[in-house]
Length: 438
Image 1 (tube, helix red, strand yellow):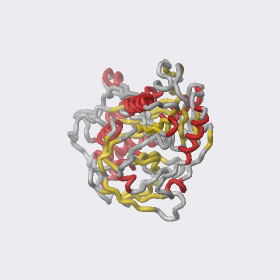
Image 2 (cartoon, rainbow, N blue to C red):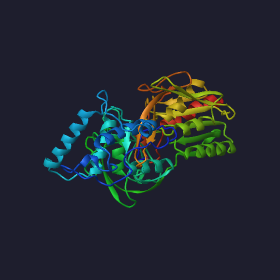
Image 3 (tube, rainbow, N blue to C red):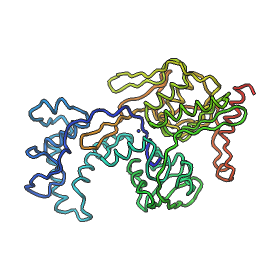
Image 4 (cartoon, one colour):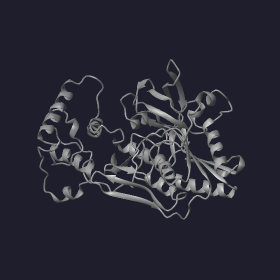
């Protein structure tokens, strides 16, 4: 939805306890020179040095250090040292004396410093969230938000936000936005160079307000412009219907907190409807919560490993299944280039165990895990903490998962007819019939 991969994708462990540090007061210290733009919010009596070091301590959760040291000393071996502090003071003074355009608030400049530290890592999945952005992000995982109703990820070639799917009945569907549309501008402002989170924040807004998107679409010579009215969007992360010949169809659009119960309900309805075979559709699914996908895999996989992660120190964390709810019917899984992250965990486990046939095109290839670390001032960072591996020990980052049956999507046929013929779904039904012996 108007959001990322992209926990972007967004796989995350439970949020850790808040780390101590700055941001607990908004009172400005007396400024001896300039406006002191970078250093508001400091507790009276603490110096600039303590504030900057606290930022680093916040990012790494070093609560014990902060609580038991009388006063931190800046190390010249650290990126945060006396030279950095002096340069920040110089930049502050220059901005105060010479910057000509619109005035930037103290909070915006501070946020820019934090974002810059995260951006320096060169990882599109590691980002800084302001308090408002974090609140919005957490609301979305609960299944409701205000926006246009489009699932998005960040295109690896252009860096632009790319639509991976639209929600039925949403403003995005009504405007005929399509999967693989690239968003170039929002309200006339380019989103090139912005993170997915920043672009999504520009698209979202109050219910009833309008947003204009400039879109680059494949096979179109000019950009397209769409004006949409934002609305309250319920996120149907799981949908179910029965097809002919006893085939059940379950589509998973994301792995959010609400998805686990929705998936359990869909499976129960499928069994109650006489399911003899299952098509699981993961196309356009950008991922989601690690906990959610693990719990959902436990509803269909045999006993054994689901996925394991390894961090930079080689520490391994395993997620397993007891096999008590293993799927009892033939399975086909639809995947494409927008199936990412948590989707690839599920698809990879199914393929490794050989309990289902993958149909479609090679998946996105996101084999790393992010974790959200909140701070006491309401802000947070999302940071890449580990790589994940399929049951057979495969890391698919930058590679993806190849389908067992290659079947590219025929977009011209789909969008060229009111009947919306889905050649990939038709192929999945054909394969499933074979598995069912029909």
